[in-house]
Image (cartoon, rainbow, N blue to C red; front, side, top):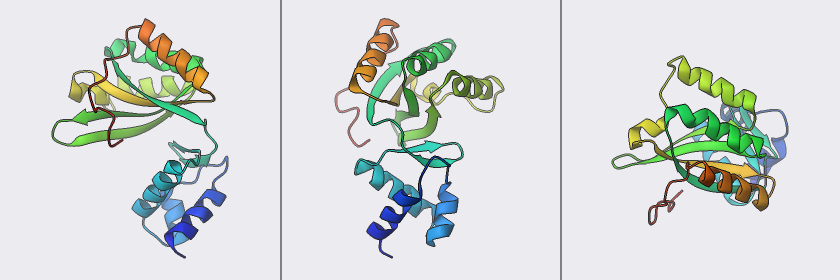
Amino acid sequence: MNGEQRRRAIAECLGAAPLSATCLAARFGVSRQVIVQDIALLRAEGAHIVATNRGYVAGGRPCSRVFKVCHTDEAIRDELFLVVDAGGCVEDVFVRHKVYGRIAAPMGIDSRRKAEAFLAQIAAGVSAPLKHITGDYHYHTVSADSEAALDEIEAALGERGFLAPPSEGALRGN
């Protein structure tokens, strides 16, 4: 099976039940990293695949946008609730480190419940927000069912003062 055939088979396997990269790797006899790369290629081709904490699922929201934001730790809850209450999903968080380059983490936060679970981990000291290594500046990929919903989210982020001015070329190479 070549890479294209494997990617088609992966896309057919994905549904509402999460499948981990490890599970998919075992199924197709490749490494987990190959699966992660396959998923990235499928997404680049327009497949709607969502990464959750239990694995990949098909579907998701058809529109997405990257927002550069900056806020205090105390405002994390407000930011996440603002997005999910408008029908969005915070797909990931990433920063641009001057030495390491792009550092990213999947989030998959599409409800207040998931936002609260994330905030509980932060509060418990499991780890610190990624934004701490870049002076609170960070990016989120946000998905929604329509461009209009993303426009609403962007306007609300702006009204709350969460949007940061974009840097020239900041989003190249995402």
